[in-house]
Amino acid sequence: MLVLRYAKEEGAEYISHLDTLRHLQKILIRAKIPVEYSKGYNPHMLLYMSAPLGVGIKSQAEYFAVETNFGGNDFPELFNKYCPSGFKCLCAVKTQKKVNLQADMDSAEYLITGINDFDVAEFLSLKEFKVLDKRGEEKEVRERVLDLKKSDNGLIATLSFGNFTLRPDVFGEALAKIYGGEVKDVLKLNAFIRGVKVEERF
Image 1 (cartoon, rainbow, N blue to C red):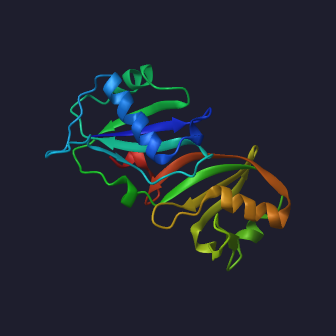
Image 2 (cartoon, helix red, strand yellow; image 1 turned 120 degrees about the horizontal axis):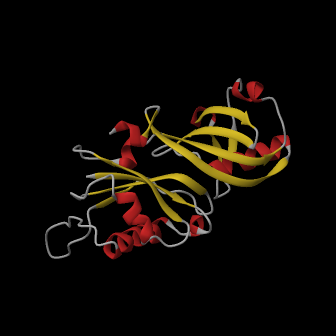
């Protein structure tokens, strides 16, 4: 099995999760990478994606795993040769373990730009923090904000991901409502399994 880290930028961030799956399958077919299929009447490619990323959020840390005997070192160059614009394989790691990315990934790090300056330490001392989700429902999410710090380009936020995802755009909008500014861009930088980058777990 190979675990792949790939980027979705330059317009690819607007492609839905299901359509991203179709893109990945077609890339593998065009590249003639030997992939295993399920058995039965309706065989399908054994490709396993990480949890969905919100449409419009750029990422340098998307993942999928695929059942193949193809070597990891040569995979990125071959994969990228057949990628559509906005997709790019960044690394490939071979593993003997069965991988469940959706269940295992539990946090992600994002760069959020456009929020006015505020006291990050004061925010982290808050006992509660509420946001309005995409359905307009108010939710308490303070425990899902794992870390927050300033960078030269904006804010670096480490948020819960997977079963308890806090969307970074929703979080950024809540910050802007309180501290001012407007979310200009959101970029997913890294994803983690119990504090370790996904590709370093295998």
